[in-house]
Length: 383
Ligand SMILES: Cc1cc2nc3c(=O)[nH]c(=O)nc-3n(C[C@H](O)[C@H](O)[C@H](O)COP(=O)(O)OP(=O)(O)OC[C@H]3O[C@@H](n4cnc5c(N)ncnc54)[C@H](O)[C@@H]3O)c2cc1C
Image (cartoon, rainbow, N blue to C red; front, side, top):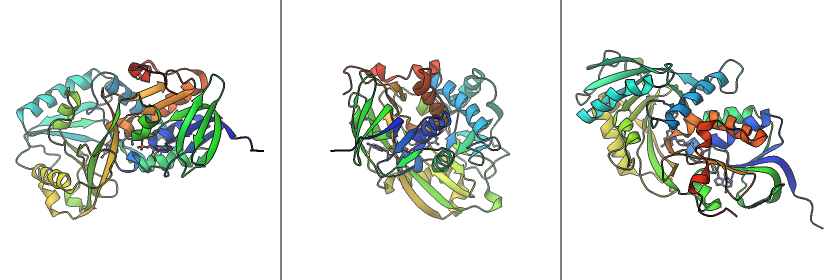
């Protein structure tokens, strides 16, 4: 006689930053939670990304509003004794232009931020910026923004896991599910389980479980240098205004890769990040990485004095309309998806975790997140 499958209040598939934040928030509510991952925590995008918690780079509208709410909530979680304490850091950020079109993107920034709650704002706007010596001659103008932050993805994953009482099961791949009003039957590589709710936080693999979702992969190369001497320390990340342009463009696939030179707490520079279509491959694309490095050196020549110690690729899960997909899957009661965060998942993770936990527990979710429901793609009911 076969034994009864293990039962949980909620099972989360995917131990990236989104799944771990959801797991933390559900466990805080006293639920019996299992977290599964095909490989292990932060095995995919969350372990191969920058950690800019940026408001300026968000699409105006819902994404900018959500990022602002997430920033405030992260600050709360980072207060002494909170799960993100020591992991989340506020810092100034610098956006620079190298063309007239990018000047216009910088012009629009003050207005865009002015439409939010005022806690992230343009602090200085100059040609030949005094806060950052040694900028390249290609740089026309620099805008300093106050109020943005940074949080490394894998560090946040560890912090959420350290603070949550839950069943951790990896390696364990979710291979299928069957949903009914009262219970969800789940198939995994380690056998069957049942749950009251199932949350899919599986990043780029989400559409293999829910095929009607238009999720695709967009890889990105990142470069890490050796530690920097104090004479070349940047006070905050230097981001090309082309990044702002690409976010508001109708076709964010087009154009050169926007450059970000990010001074990490470790004293190293992280230089990111390209956008390519290599499917789900995490293989290093040396040609793209070389272009990225030479572009970064043109804007900030001190890079040329550094040694590159690491190049790696991450894969973002992108959705065809440029917005994440968050909410219950039509036709599959109790099965919730949180995926497709592309370049915004670190920024939004805390808020998404809190809100999915609320959706699981009492059916409530903030109105902005409710508009990201997968219902917008629904042409056929999921199995
Ligand atoms: C180069 C690069 C730079 C970035 N920079 C930033 C940035 O500066 N700021 C920012 O906010 N965001 C940034 N991002 C985006 C951010 O990293 C992602 O949006 C975020 O990590 C997505 O987290 P996730 O938990 O949804 O997915 P992932 O981290 O991809 O996690 C998905 C997990 O699901 C597991 N899984 C998949 N299928 C299954 C299955 N069937 N069963 C069980 N487990 C499964 C995988 O093993 C994986 O661990 C960047 C991304 C990249 C690639």
